[in-house]
Image (tube, rainbow, N blue to C red; front, side):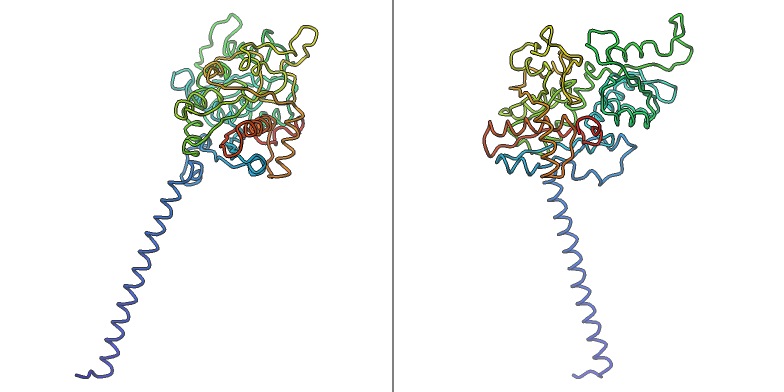
Length: 391
């Protein structure tokens, strides 16, 4: 039976519209589910740092951690190993010390020692990076910061601290046994804070809190509870060596104590600058260094241009993981400087002095282990706070 032309055209239009609707809906569904599938596969394969910008965080302290693990192409190609650098310079305060400062302050708050917005002040003796992190987080959380530093550090560190509102006290570099050594003096300043001349506490509830990064186990816990699990997830547990320097020792111990039980064949190597005693402690179980021989000791406790790592005493944080460190490498200033310039030239990677030391040692470990191994080190901070000294 034939249909009038107008009814036939209407029927054809309805059928065409239905088909187009079905096809469009199917295409949209395919696009949606394939996109979700792709996103899920990327999420499953990506390290935690891949999602740093995917959520809204609470304040500047919410930006700390989940730093990317990057392949250092030039060093990997030169050695045949996969050399990975944990990009700690991407923390908001510019270094791995953000993690330590935040956990120290949080721990003091949880213990009821610190309460914000009452004039309480956090004191620390530091060569710079920890002080910068404390100053930043103290400002964000309602505290003041008083930082005691040696007077021979890179000038931009003092400038950053002052811009962050910290009180900066510069002292001459002396041995840890001297009462005026920067760490010792910070401890004294904290104990005296808020007291009147007769030693009695003021009526205010403000306190002076000594952060004590060298001995405070909140330093160790920051890396055991966060940095190490990040590395384990980012590498999916497939790494052969961990290489880094130590100042307080919290990073080295925290990473080592977490990763070694989970990766039984993992080797841990200390990278130590010239003049530091930690190399000797790991290799020979003694802190003695030739630079400490009577008549040869120089003004600096650790005679190097490298800042942030190297020390001539055994700290609580370093001791927590010391027995799990397999070996140590001594890195000279010349090697560190050459490495930093090489990485800028080949990778556009602008690093600070301790990061350069770590990379020198990572290359040595790669040569020792041979091609095909995965080696992780830390890129503690950028060269931006080392312009007037190391650079």
